[in-house]
Image 1 (tube, rainbow, N blue to C red):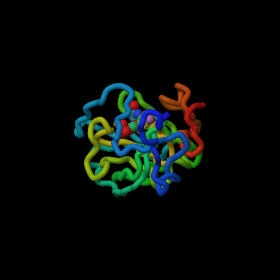
Image 2: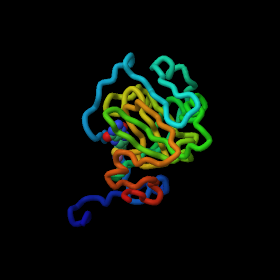
Image 3: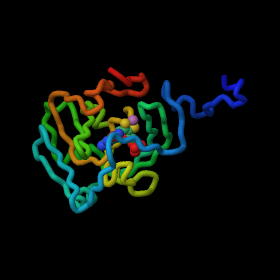
Image 4: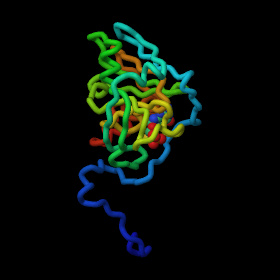
Length: 200
Ligand SMILES: Nc1nc2c(c(=O)[nH]1)N[C@H]1C(S)=C(S)[C@@H](COP(=O)(O)O)O[C@H]1N2
Ligand SMILES: [Mo]
């Protein structure tokens, strides 16, 4: 079909092929994937509420959040709509640092990220505590743009990107699992792109 149209068959560089999960294609662009409108969040008004089954819940201001230890992470990004962008560079605060701050109870097994306007995404505590899970404030060396989640977004590299809630305003530690926004619409609860866990 490609040949008959005189087009070159799209190929993946063999060096990159094993980094592209099944059913995904590579893009150099960084698409915007949002359900609903991009909010405007002034830094003075932004709070990060960390709550649920924790010893000391917190509501962090921007200056308190910015004072936490910063990490950088290079990770590939895979959207369930099939685009993948390799080698995204993020900087921000490790979710492990947040957990140390609030001290989840020993019975906690799940984490829900709360984005602006009611967007939620759930992950298991094991996934949440992976060392490259972070609350990012910059991408590719620049502050997040409004469309990509300014001022703070979650980044969960080991799962499809719908788990990486933009415009992050809350982190909830839970004993029981609670499906998030897309999970309730039939997306897979675990969302591991290596196994094409797209839909439940
Ligand atoms: N708050 C919020 N976070 C969100 C979304 C959204 O609609 N609202 N979309 C998700 C989806 S499906 C993807 S693929 C990524 C896309 O991030 P990007 O727009 O920065 O590429 O954000 C995720 N986080
Ligand atoms: Mo997505």
